[in-house]
Length: 224
Ligand code: CA
Image (cartoon, rainbow, N blue to C red; front, side, top):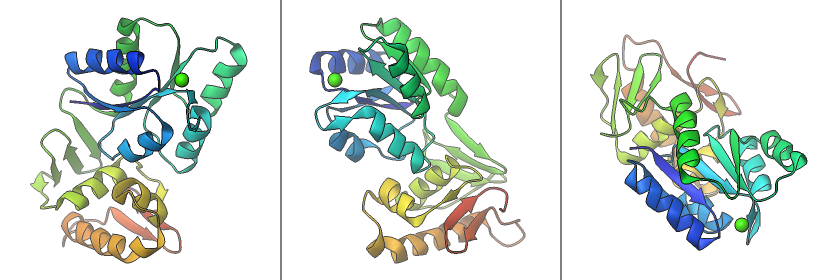
């Protein structure tokens, strides 16, 4: 089931969105502020619904930072402000779609379905990159049909890399998104997990798919 993060400080609206999602085969994860959103934004989240005016800051700025960090997950913004410039600003900040309040929950669901179709194969709940397949529902990863034996953290690391295909991800991004910690002290831990993941992924006789980009980070997919 797709996991959706709802960042909205109006509690009644937040609850009704959550209820609707739960009733329609989604997993709703709620956040009432940007700080909470940052905590709840795990690698398993497939889509983000984002209000723009939040008690601890601007949803637009948060979104811009997310995009600057390379996060490409679909974001649907909710805004009460019905002006062209706000909508343009939203799309410029990296939103994939927007809805103007008040909106019908039915329309929200339709937009969510459309956005999710672009990213995850909803029938199978799978991510695919080259010969690597990740089954998000059953938490199974495989390469060339051969199952990979991964610990939780390595699985999450793989999901994160698969969601940033052919793109350099830095250790800082990994620390923040997978470990939910900030940077430096985690570099070695990340390296160890990347190496273990690589051992599973790029076993003997397989062309490497998880690359180290010197001085920058890692890249999964076609070598740079
Ligand atoms: Ca608000």
